[in-house]
Image (cartoon, rainbow, N blue to C red; front, side, top):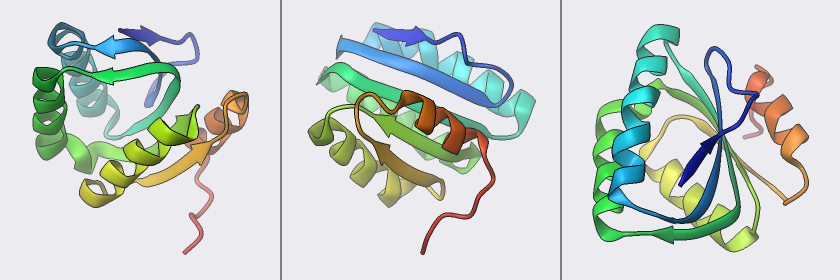
Length: 124
């Protein structure tokens, strides 16, 4: 499931991913992300993967469909949590998104929020 964190405001979307994501999880959450992107012009995403355990096949398809239509509206993606999931998510994101992507160790949630909110240039 996706848990919306209280720091989500304006273009900043902070989500905690818990357990195995289902198609229903994506169908509930993706319209809200689209609405925020259209309203704010861009998204700055912080995803806490510390309790994430993967996704179902249909959920993967929905995620891909969202990406094809909306990746250009994502400005930054901060991934927090276990290195395995964060690295996989980062590899996927950098192949389809023009957004800056950065991985933060578990426990560095505040650092991830600060980076997602900032306009500091990404290192080349």
